[in-house]
Image: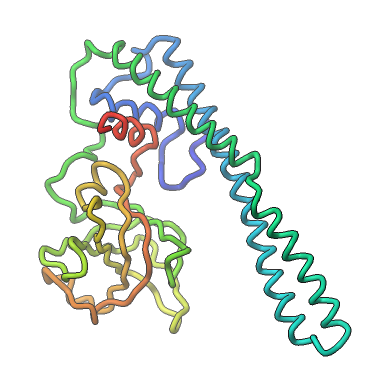
Length: 288
């Protein structure tokens, strides 16, 4: 069986589903203790999850094409304004008007793939809950243990691996999703955030502005009421503000100043390997 296309998980699809169910049930068990109906249910969930992802990607590609048409529209508009006094400029301007109307008409429609992706995601959640209830009965006689891989330990965070995903829409410096290592948790962060920790990027990206340089250390600043460092390592991802660390001496301090950093943007941070979708869905339902 192939591994997930997402580099954030080193496990196969089946291992990920089993891992998520183990985290939700609080028990460690092997696939052999499950009934044939449960094993078939796991295979069906994997196929359903892959189909939902394909539908989501198809819908995403649709809106990406619309976004490119907007870029083309702006380019034609600027070109039309520059050549407005000549016939070619008039032709481009008229074409731009028709292109604008064509884009607006399609922007108001939702592709079938996006609707199918939503329906498949709801079906996946329902069948996952059904499989969880059935496996809970089948494994009720097994001893309850700590979650595997030690992901729920809260004693220390320095040295723990995290996965960073920067939001390209809200960031001035954008780099590909990557792993990092927590090197410092600030006990007394600045007033504009409630918690903060420094992360050393495993593969420092090259940034070009204002001049080319390597981005090695960043600080994740927690500012939302519902996000925290503990939440990032035990419950799932947290939405944080990322800043570049310019003064490395603060890595030996319990705080830092605003002038020691520069803005990068916002994004998600979570423990690595990333908790599987199944575990997050079930824990959310249990908490609700």
